[in-house]
Length: 385
Image (cartoon, rainbow, N blue to C red; front, top):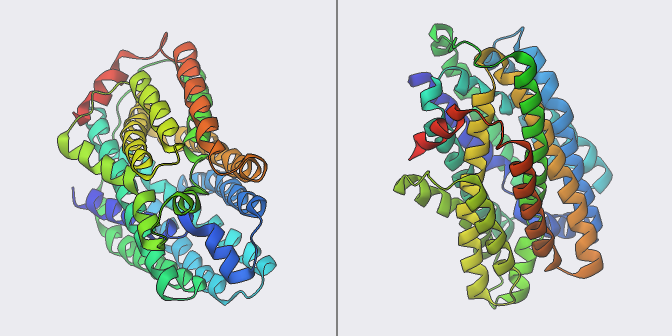
């Protein structure tokens, strides 16, 4: 589908540009503003998640009245202009204000996910989610490597010029895609379950997603600095590559078409991978990073498949908005917690805390979802195999 290809390309551009600084915020704040307190980094990352969490439901409501691509056309223009504003900021307070305003508009690109799913038959959901998940992981790879290269060659603020370019490219893709969108029709499959039961299961899934995303993102803010503390090679490019290993693993998983790792096994493998990364040996950390990447890919895909099996096309955007709030809340709490843990207990403790979180995710999944999970969810998940 031509329109789907355009939308996937837009997602790829957004992920690459938006993930450039994720592994390097401690270095960015230190170099650009002289801020070295890990708690400040954690609070800032929490604020970014909170901003996206609050902004997206508003864009989802607007998209019910205004075509999605038209919304994205204007929001990406605003995001690009504010990215340039971030480049111009010379003090940390101004940067906070402008960057959070930028994220309000960047949150709108999340509309692409439910929009793409509404164009697909449910039989294809697993394959589509797998593709989008790999796009996100590959975007994380490209973003981390690009961010490391920019920070190594230029001043840290130049990263926002690259981000602005990405926003303007997205705007062009949305403009070019508008004609195809007019001819597209959405999937009108009937609701497979009563609305009250569906909403109850979506809320339960949201709780599981919260714990899962909290655990998965707890190790992200300080991984690059942790790796440099145990590695003899202290290069932002190398650190970005190691940070992005889960993305490479996701690509391999999709290429091998191995989609039959069930959620409980993925969570168990993720726990092992997190504990391995806590070892103060580079080789062991690399192995743990690979195991964690395999588990993270399958956990994300299977849980997202379950969401769209529980939902209906006309409810995709609103149900995705509810789940996204839970995901972003998990990321928000993890960002704040990571900074506090590192200050109090050092850079290894987030791995142990995240491993405990994966165990709690496994328990909550078993108690809240497996007893009433629709049979179609398993079939949809297997579509990526």
